[in-house]
Length: 547
Image (cartoon, rainbow, N blue to C red):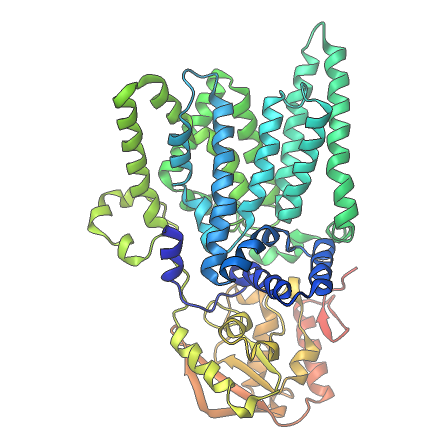
């Protein structure tokens, strides 16, 4: 019900990562309905082998799409029912495993209620990210590792399962690779520590340690090489820290952002749990703490974590934040225990739900007392403030003048970008494109820019990052508004049609009047090289050389 209400308060026009997997969901559903099995299988195979964002997370959702449709509501509810709830249940089992030796066992239902009130599990899911799917195999692998004493007591079958589950984690979401490395390192460290300090059974433990590590490694690497060989080669030859440097931030800024997303309550709970686990030497809880901290430490060198990137970090820190549940379960009995549990869930609801809710709930006087305890970063339903203006723009682009014409959008902000226009109008989507968003990741699509029949852009470059990282937008936009520029000489601005965005920027349409000259092409190349001297022109693109 909450998921349905959330989607009901959103505007259409989902773009970029908010739309990416929903688009894959719809594409595969359409191919299944047509019975187009060759394209269906080819799409899956190609995606698994080469794509950083492969289709594997949406494959289990397809039966639901065939039954109830591929709408946004069906997609989000599928993520909640098939991924978020199972991942939450697995996390509760992990929590119980960590604290089962500390007094009375934790109530499954109380722990599940608390986990389901954690905003950082809901925020990426409600926004359309399927990353929470990868928590399922990762959590199961972690559960097996803890139950087998860091794999020292694992059987052959359990070792193989651990490796296979870790590969499934990587298959579902590439960026979970950092957490997989953290899990491997912490498991080896904890197991090695026990082997070193074992007395009479040291050789036996060492033999098991080597056997199980080898089996798990084979079960992890073999399917990865068979199914995702080209992708692994791409990963080994690509510096993701370099191409995503535009999304990087200072260490302090990243930590502040993490705190603002988690809020004071969840941060305090995790901190207290970490101190208590260290004090009583709870090795299973400390295992989770080490994996969570290492996962964050490894990932943050690539870029500042987005809301979907934080899932593996907070997943492993959740068993630490669950420590107060052990106190409730250990000290309270009977009705008092149920009353304390209900009170805890009520307080968490007041702190957590406004972070995800729409404006009316966020400003409710009933929740004003909890404002200081809420997370500062909020994730209300997706809305485009310029939605009515963009609808007018889409209507303009749907008239006969633009039929069969290629439209280039030189904008990259939450107010205007090619993805928004394509989402708002599936009819014109095949004719809409961009020339690039982020310099080091995308480069500049020179051929597309010089062959477009119409260019749509804004008076001030419309950006979502600092201008120094989006010269692929800034340079051509400023050229179009300079009458003396060789690029501008091939385009005419339609001054009678303009559109005012909510941020005050104005959208204009440029019509190509002649083919851009070689001078325009050379000017663009030279201008980009002022910012990136190593860039070269190749295959219709200006950008860094890719191996």
